[in-house]
Length: 274
Image (cartoon, rainbow, N blue to C red; front, side, top):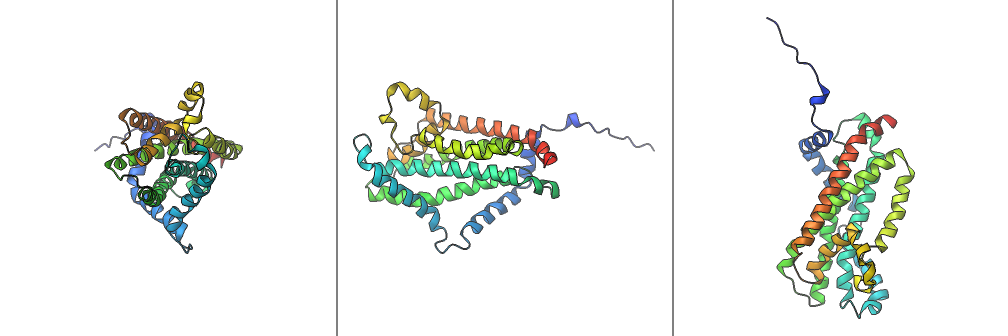
């Protein structure tokens, strides 16, 4: 009896993007354990524990409010309530992208020793950031109550803006990490860019103070849309408009897909170079 041998054809393998997504799904328990580990490690030796996720942003908001409340009072009543949601979302974005970049650069040696989906740590880092963001919403809601702001069903749309930002941050982190793996200075350059990016995003200041002829420039900044969408349910007490929601989710998905594509096409090169 003859046995038919099946010829191996690498061209018939799924696209690297799809292979990585399938492997990530198969190793979803690993991702869950990584998220649990990240949260536990962060607070294990902390006296205040989870309170730090709420206290840190609250202290930053208090300091900035003391400086800017009177300056922006004519255009932005209840300035602390305007500032806090934008600050929370920006911190989530900045910390997540920076951590993913570090995970990609530092994960090369691990990839050579044991097999794990190479995006597992990046995805776990993003999910961990969402956990911290959710915890930080507690003082934000308390702040709304203190200012007499209504607690409405519009708040249920805020997680959609957080999801869009998470996808955007994952894509940016994977892309920057992929490039930084080849050119080490890119990681440091990105940290400088984040500092500049913050001031081109209406987090601390209201867009009303900008000359109208420059508004189009701020519209080119994806984080402007993310911050506007996330802030709206908390400050304006309105659900995120469908067009803005579509814009943020579209930007998030497109950026995530682009970063995922770049990472999955360069990961093998990173391992060989390492």
